[in-house]
Amino acid sequence: EVQLVESGGGSVQAGGSLRLSCTASGFTFDDSEMGWYRQGPGIECELVSSISSDGSTYYQDSVKGRFTISQDNAKTTVYLQMNSLKPEDTAVYYCAAAEVPLLLSCSADFGYWGQGTQVTVSS
Image (cartoon, rainbow, N blue to C red; front, side):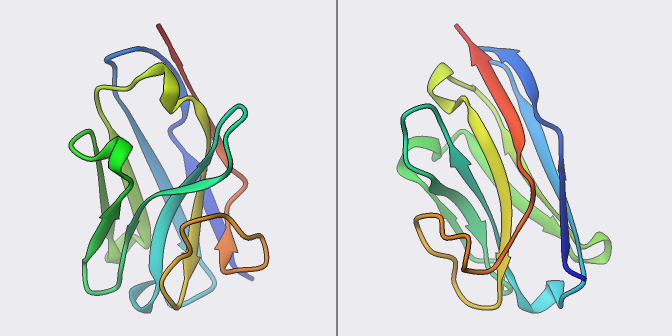
C-alpha cells in the first residue's frame, strides 16, 4: 500500500519559516520524482517544487530563493524548507510522487498523493 505522510504545517507570521516533511512507503522512492503541490484560497492547485530521482529540482517562480526541496533516500522522506513566508503562501500543501515527471497542475488520477498539511501565514 502506497502511503505519503506529511507533517510540519502550521501557522506563522510573515517572514517566518516552516519545514514540511513527507515520508513515503509502498513504492520505489529512489526511482520516483517527488514534489509538493499547494491549493490556496481561490487559487488552482499548482506544483510548487519537485525533485527528480537524479536530484534535479524545479521551483515555481513565486518561491524561488525562498523554498528549498531536498530528500533523504535512506529515510524515504522529502522535505520542503520554506523561508521568508508570505501571506500568499497560505495553502494546503500536498506531497506527491510519480515514476515520471510530475505535472504542473494537480491531478488526483496522476501519481500518489498525501492527505495534505495546512500552512497559514499571517501578515
